[in-house]
Amino acid sequence: MEIIKCRDYDAMSIRAAQIFEEVVNAKPDCVLGLATGSTPLGLYKKLIEDHKAGKIDFSRCTSVNLDEYVGLGENDDQSYRYFMNTNLFDHINIDKAKTFVPNGLESDAYRACRDYEDILEKVGPQDIQVLGLGENGHIAFNEPETYFPKETHCVDLTESTIEANARFFENPDKVPRHAYSMGIGSIFRAKKIILLASGVKKSRALAEALYGPIIPQLPASILQLHSDVVVVCDDAALK
Ligand code: F6R
Image (cartoon, rainbow, N blue to C red; front, side, top):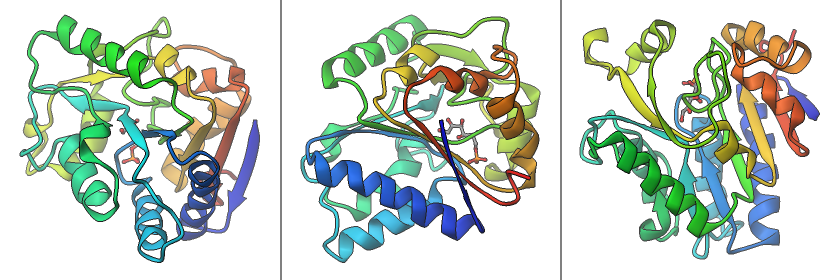
């Protein structure tokens, strides 16, 4: 595991974009594994800038996202599909038909998860997977548990995650209680993983993920076992 400690959030985003661009430029038809949330916003902004400056071409890329809230569709401004469209896809030349997010409007959880695993299988492994880190150590929506879920599954979000994500909703009651999320096995298929962490709120989870025991109660700790993980974080997240 390589750890790159940056001065601040902006420096972290620029460094992450460089790594990302190396992968896309080396393999123009690569599969991008993408995350939502506040952390990758700076990375996406930089990718958009660099795309507009002609430094990166997404026309042959495919993307797969980590997760989606159950019950929310692409027209819902809190859905992760909406987030990806507005914060990245609408501003770059990726073919939207080749961008995949779990289907939050499929109420049959078994079918939603199986369909997403089929998509992951069909498009092939992510050449690069971006991950944010939950304050409770979650990656995607793999919440602290007694086991590591392998495939895409339906998650009961924890109170801590609901509270952390309430900032995006009008009121905490509107935060969905369930999400479809890639499992650890789905994430581990990625050839390269970039874990992003910024701010003091992530410092406990990051320290435990990097240096603690590998336990499902701290899902990100499993990343210690992946063969190509780059942690790009800022000073505040890594004391
Ligand atoms: C989002 C996701 C989550 C977030 C994590 C951190 O697709 O899978 O694991 O990466 O909750 O969220 P932020 O970046 O908002 O602190």
